[in-house]
Image 1 (spheres, one colour):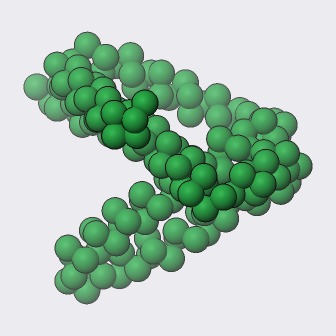
Image 2 (cartoon, rainbow, N blue to C red):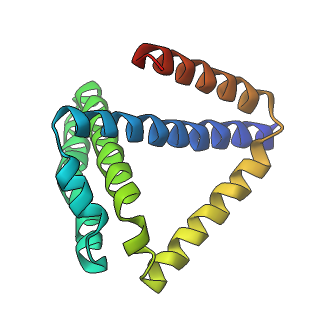
Length: 158
């Protein structure tokens, strides 16, 4: 029973993070088109490895003060405000990191340590998926994810 509970929690976390990453990547592309950032995106996708690494770290540096602020709010009794700030920080951070990573991945992979870290994270995700793939909760969340994706495809007109 405890194992099933932890597998269910793992399924929710893995799928939510994946879904959020996918959704925010699409949203980031939309914002980029809306703000006419094509030249910046082209420059970033051709950035040398060290510049790509700096570009990936910048969103984390931007969001970290928001995370600290959220904890401070919660410690001082403003739990709802702290949770909302943390959610906003998570969304903003994931949006920016997903966008930058998509554009800089080839340059980042030229760092051996980064490629190893990336492969370790991917192995961890494959392991988590293998653990939870057969659960009813996983299938329910996956069906919900597909419904949301369909909605956004239809909303965008394509």
